[in-house]
Length: 151
Image (cartoon, rainbow, N blue to C red; front, side):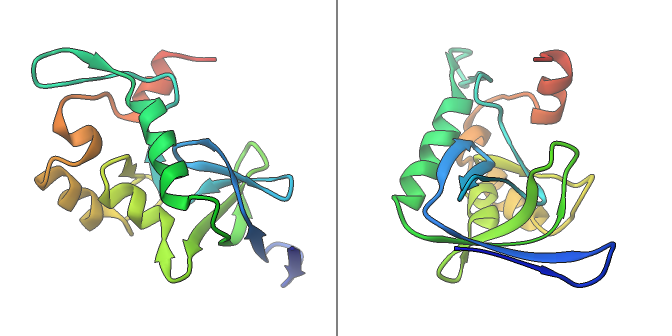
């Protein structure tokens, strides 16, 4: 199901519902619409992280896998009010009443994207404190990794 409601010429509200295909740790595809989870930034698919013993692991692939496993072919409801520069809908997505955006950060697979939102800062601090996901070792912030590893 795909619903698009125009509020005025400059703003819109969009609800996108369906079982998503997982693109990476913070991007989904539902009904041919690419969705970027708003306010969070997951490690990139090809990004590696380091354990405390300095061994490397592919945290980006694991972040994607963890999101895929968490969704487990369930229907997701995404609410969006804007697009990013890549024409992806920026959205808060939920399974029932659980925010996937919050879950990703709280589980340690994404950071609060403070440049755009402060909403998930407390979830990030909790993940960091409990050494969940990428916080169990060292990693490069995704926005820095992207800048240093252009496609």
